[in-house]
Length: 160
Image (cartoon, rainbow, N blue to C red):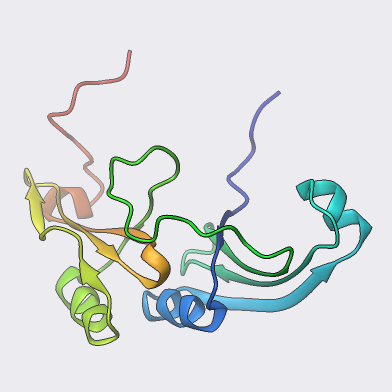
C-alpha cells in the first residue's frame, strides 16, 4: 500500500465567500463550487441529513488542492477561532510564494494579520504566519538565494 498523492486539504468555514476570496488573493484558482447532500455524503462523513456548500481551489502548479466547506446542516460546531500555533490538531496550511512582502501587504489590505513577524531562516527562506478568515493560520515562505535555485540544504538534522 502506497499513498500516491495528497488529494486535498479540507477546511470547514462559516463564510465561504470570504474564505474563497482570501485564498484567491494568495493565488489559488477556484476550480468550482457545488452543494453536496444525500445518502452518500451522510455515510462518508458519519452525519445525518448533510447539506454542504463546497469550493475547490487549486495551487498554481496544479498539484495542491484546498476544499473549503460550509455546512448548512447539520450546523458546524464552533472552533477556537484564534487558537495559537501550538494547539493540538491541524493548525496551519503552508504555501511557497514568489514575493513574501507583496503577498503579506495584499493580505493585510484585506484584513489578514501577521501572527508573529516575518523572519529569515538561515539563507534558505523568509517566512511568516498570517491569520486569515475564521482564524485559519497560513504559513507563507519565500525561498532565498540557492534554495530558490533548487539547492535545498538546511542546517536542520536529517531524518533518521
